Length: 248
Ligand SMILES: [Zn+2]
Image (cartoon, rainbow, N blue to C red; front, top):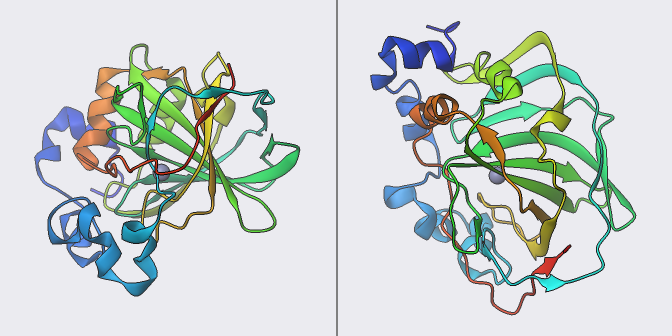
């Protein structure tokens, strides 16, 4: 069981069982029921921002104020796969040395992970999946680069990741290199706004950059993820007094 990949499970029909259900039961928060997003703020005092915050994510991205924003500059290196199945998502841990530059500041890439369906929406439209590249600055603030994933051509990089997912949970390191750049869209226009983590404790420390052009993955790749995580997207949050900027 341990060595089976998500794609193999999909093919065998064994996916009908839920290998993570027991792990989920032990989790403090989830995406439905009494531990779902509408209750996060009450589950733990440290989660208070989830219900009381006024700069929460995700939001619907539309009508961005045209702004003179720099192009997103990524300096990401190929690295050996290190995948964590943490019961909330599939997370790929990135070796140090990759970073992006945002408003002249350096943000180091720590990890990226996936949501199904998308958390942000674009002019009201939801996408099958969303990818979050989580970067951290030395002062502790985060810069997350969001990329929508839509159905289309298969992604070879996603195949490599899916084939190595520890379906029963936990961590797996593999002697295979991947290039994170291959998970970025060709077009680099984006929305920018001030927001939060989309999971508890919902800390309002995130500068969000969400690309307007999605990347494509195949139906089979979307299904493989959604069989493990049928729903791991927080609902849309109110914008309150925030402005959304557009790089176009
Ligand atoms: Zn995320």
